[in-house]
Image 1 (cartoon, rainbow, N blue to C red):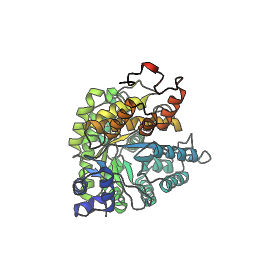
Image 2: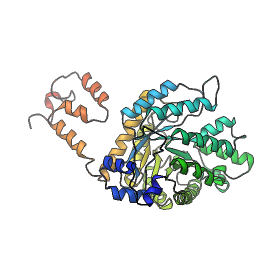
Image 3: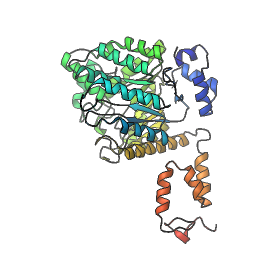
Image 4: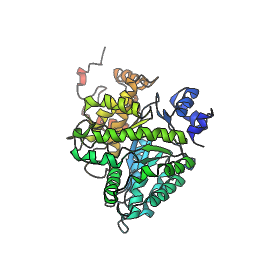
Length: 423
């Protein structure tokens, strides 16, 4: 049985107890929020070393970090090093977005299986995947893709222990025509795969047609469905357009179908959104999707921050989280440019952690500001050791402090003119 079904029966699972303790949250209230679909705990029983994490209403904002290979850059060891960075700097969940196998066998599934299994073996963080990537790879492209291949891949991911999966079931034949007015068309990789397939075959989205079969697999393994926004805006120009809203409406319907089945569900959101439009977009998404946990990519508040999209995303993510988003997907400085390096991953996680923490302070989550107050007291006392232990990135703190020419008790910005000294 899923966490949702157990909660509906009034059962408090070990996973619910673990999350409630970690969040210092009332366990009965948490159980009710899970029963209502307002909180999810992605927790596949086959992920044996999992440390459960709660995502949703009234909980701390969580962040996800993406790793994964590409056909042009397939180095399993490097991606596993990124996993270590994600854990070290405080990601709450990991997504494997691998789309390619080894150079000797591009776009084959075997290597993808190996990497996913290694991730699940090595991390206690919830792990998510996008099964359509592997299904298209194993099909050799979008023309020969079929639902049987997809269901086989989905089953494999679930059996391995994947905790949540992105499923792009909200794209419909009716919504495809709405993308013609866009500047950036379809920005989602999975969404573009499906749109190409639907146009070529002139058929409805197979992940919508066979949604019940998908839920059957997820129900068996308690895999949380992350209803993917395949038509999310890839530019400020496209934010809030008819295509995005048509898909969002369909996702809201699928939330109810998933809940009725007993499958935990969250919803993915934009994307690129002007800063002033973020509050309304979050309000609409929460209303249309019946309060399901909302998972956003950014949102990016400008299109011209290449090399700094982690900052653009953190700005949007802070506001989105304050307004009701529950789960922030990190962006790295490499977004839109290339596969991220280890340093890119670190920078992306820290930026998202700042956004999530700032939003939690604004939301007045109990005790979340205590660390900030401790830091302020340590600054006043010029206690550099304490400041080092409290900051989000101790390594950068140590590096910058070590580079200061002035080795006195003050920093080298003000030296003896330090405002904190002798007061």
